[in-house]
Image (cartoon, rainbow, N blue to C red; front, side):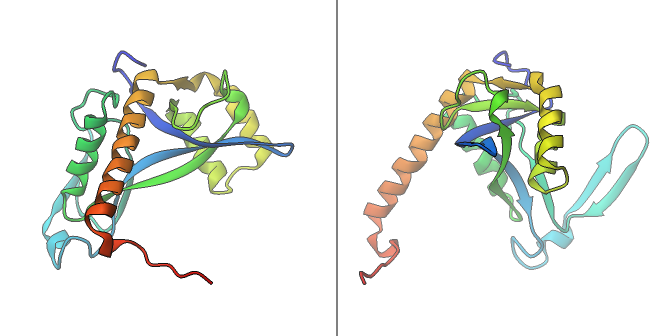
Length: 195
């Protein structure tokens, strides 16, 4: 997948790994475009007409709310290979009045990973595997059934070295920016009290 042809795969960032006897799973984060009614100012959503179309039909509609999984950068290259491509994608989404980027999580069994995944590592999951993980997260499939499906779909998970470097660089930049903002605007820091 390093050649830029990500296709219908979802970038997943490793967050945590559990090695409990009854729960040997890795938690991964993915990003979504979200839209909620009422964001972006009064009346702006009502003015925007959207169209859903394919080769057989076209349906005009007004956007009420939406959630969509982000597959790649806005430049159409398929993979997030630089921190700038991540930043540009998120910025362009959030520049739209009613959209924002959100982070969500899901679990995949540890046996899908060739070696122990490190926090911040990025993997690409084929959509069928990703969908099964969403079903498991929503309690729509039981643990054993999910493990069986993951075994069947194990070839749909691949490490993405270039995206790992890009997301780690982007995350470091986010932390640096947060520290800078904290020092530049101490009045915005959360207050606490000792008990």
